[in-house]
Amino acid sequence: MGKILFFRLGERDRISVSQLVRSLQNILGVLEDLDASISNRKSGSVRWEVAVLSKNSPPLIGVEGFPISIKRPDTTQDIQRAVLGGIGMLAKKAERSSYYSDSVLEKLRKLALQSKSIGPLKVYSDDNGGKEKKQETSINESTLNNIEELIGVKYKGFGSVVGSLDAIIVHKRYEFRIWDEKTGKPVTCFFSHEKLDMVKENLKQKVLVYGEVNSNQRGEPVSILVEGVEPRKSQNTLPTIKEMSGLVKDMYEGKTLKEYLEDIKND
Image (cartoon, rainbow, N blue to C red):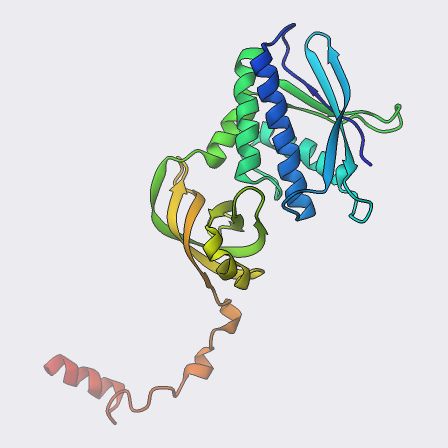
């Protein structure tokens, strides 16, 4: 079982009911999406309970996770670390952790948008009675700018990306991510249920993914609406020069290379 995870909703004395409800919906959505990614189960493996609910200045909510079943591994601490670590990363730079799907980023984007009107949303864990170091981060306008750089679409067009297909996510929609060989950054690949078998066949392989590519303002691909996936052979599996030598017989029609080139020139 993990520690209590706290969310302080802005910096104002009061927020509207609609802002409160939207905040809680997006917070729960982030927790559920990360749960599905970490546990590799579409329905997740953790239930979230309200441990603290305080109307101070501003409102504060604390949530605690409990495993749905004792037969499954307890991933609550892993989820909490992913929340704090991933949000902390996004507050500093346009980079996501491996568990942060576009769905997670979209929910965090909505929370970051609210920070413009109610102030930064502070996220932290308890310190277990002073026995552990308190972890703390926030969702603010810098978070918003970095998320929009990651998933904001500036250009669209048909194209392809080469990278490693390491994991498939089927929570709410079908997607997987590959790390683009050119940029070294993850690209989210969305596909239909009909393509699931094709994607599974190429799992844990280097692949070429093609379809409609969405690129950011720097021209870097951020997502693809997948039309096809093909295995990409490693350079190590390609034949060497020595292995290819002799494959083509009598290339110069029995002449030396010099004689052959002179004949071509005269023709």
